[in-house]
Image (tube, rainbow over the protein chains, first blue to last red):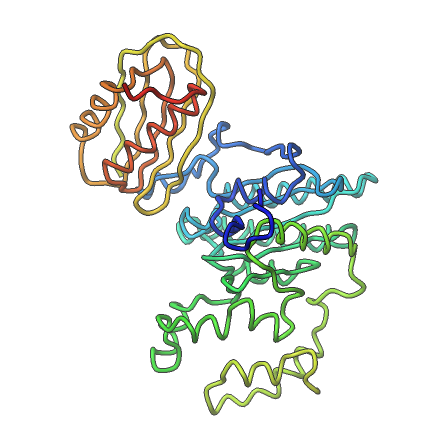
Length: 284
Length: 104
């Protein structure tokens, strides 16, 4: 726990394992993990391809409470296979969200918190990972009608691929300065566009375009969060208490298209240009 | 990926289930679970090139300091160095035995 108000002694959320992150978000003693590592449900595909599996397949799913409110909490472990989602990892997330949807349909109120640290589909399990991500997205769209679905991207892996779309579907999206959000990862864009256009090694450039601060300034997320576990928890509580939003970001299609039309692709876009076009204050 | 299995002599002492570490570059996860066997059954998945003798040496050195409890131990190694392996094994045993390991 936090040691008073001295920021040097604060516990960094980013340095915690996926399991500890879930524990920190939930009320003390309320965490009940669903499909634990001791159930030994590992990926059946990685071993066939000579890759060492992990007992939780890189995903922690739990039930618990936040400020007494019933939730499911899900965290992807970015250190295992880049937080990629295959059959088991994906099914754990989709199944947990679907249980929450069913509970809400039966009159029980269960919200969801997702802690996303993921490169998207696990390439070794490509089609199964894709199918699982589609199921996750369907479950979020169903659940967000009943209860808030809050997503956090805290770093260091960030949130990419199909899971960046998943993040965009959530009721509320929160990011730290270290977090990154993008459809394609920096190396992928560099391979496609060339190093002169997109240098994946240029950290200030990459974070300038896809980091939490820029995503906040350009209105693609709801809030910017500090790394201190206490403050992360407070922000999650704040957004859960907001309830179901009046409108979902993913439904604002026309205003997004109008903004996209203003992009001039003849010159390389900069972080400042993106802010001028995308920020909430920018005129259409 | 290499897989190994060792059966080692063990003490019959009560243990808790334990899980430490993760399968990230240069690290490993170690799981200790209850077993109905009187020995320590150790199952290893490793991405490292090194073979059986290296793992046996690591386990034999560990046994000198900490006699193993009867258990099933699973190791998922992502090319950790022997020092990191030793630390994770001691960490897992410490959790399983629910007390500080003695270093005498």
